[in-house]
Amino acid sequence: MGTARYIARRLIFSLCLILGVSVILFAMINAIGNPVEVLLAERPGITEEMIQAVTEYYGLNGSVTDRYFTWIWALLRLDFGTSIIYNLPVSEMLVTYGLETLKIQVPAILIALLVSVLISVLAATRQYSRVDFGVIASAMVGHSMPGFLLGIVLILIFSYSLGILPSYGAYSTRNPLWGSDVADALWHMVLPVGMLVFFNCATLTLLLRSSLVDVLRQDFITAARASGLPERRVVFGHALRNAFIPVLTYLGILFGLMLGTAPVTETVFTWPGLGALYIMAIQQLDYPLIMGATMVITVMLVTATLLTDIAYVAIDPRIRLG
Image 1 (cartoon, rainbow, N blue to C red):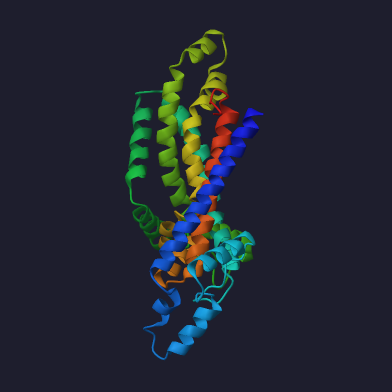
Image 2 (cartoon, rainbow, N blue to C red; image 1 turned 90 degrees about the vertical axis):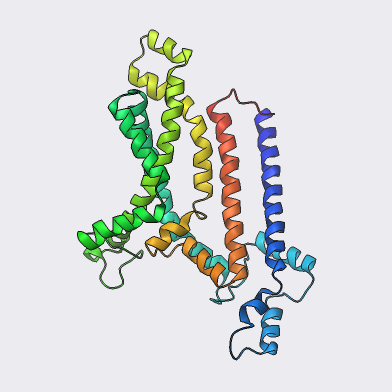
């Protein structure tokens, strides 16, 4: 009963947070005035009548309150409006470009999580050794290196020098690799996924290694070892589960911000994802697209945070539900 009440409170808080973000976003967009007028005013051949027609088409001639509630009601029906620049439904564009972003982000996070667990265990169980110092140094380099720099280095090495991997795009424009669309898509994913794995793994390794070192010093670990349990079971069965709790927060944020952190990777590798689309929408003042993408990112982040809070309770019953 306590868990159900806790989840219900967290869900209500999450919905209020999303609603608050929608109010702030709508107010900021409307603070610039009529977005259509700002966008089209300086274009040659655009008359005042044409601007007025587009304004009426997008429903921008009503009161702010009416437009906000109309927009919210449309969002609940998954209707994000029509893009001003591309003249396409925003929902379709978000799905199409969002899937391309998830195609590289999700595998990168999962691979980074697996690699960081293995590396962190190796370093934490050999504290102050050369292996430990090497892992910490490598993780610090990855944590502090600019994302675009590694992407450029990977392109220079594997695309221009060795010529074995494509440097841009998600698909070949002419002949797919080995005549297979699947193989061609995986081939194009190698560099962007590799870049994301490196950076995600660096932060995850620093967090997990530090947490694991602290847990391995706890009394219950000493007792587990004294009872004759194999070291592998002590580390993976007892220590790792408790050390993983602080990492959940970062994982929740990482999954929630998959779409929000995509622009750097997608710009470097010219990947046709939501991050690149978001940048173009901002540059072109495509306000339906900006608002739709922002709300999707907000919902993903809030949902990931909610699931993280629930996972805390499942992993560690000692966490209070109050």
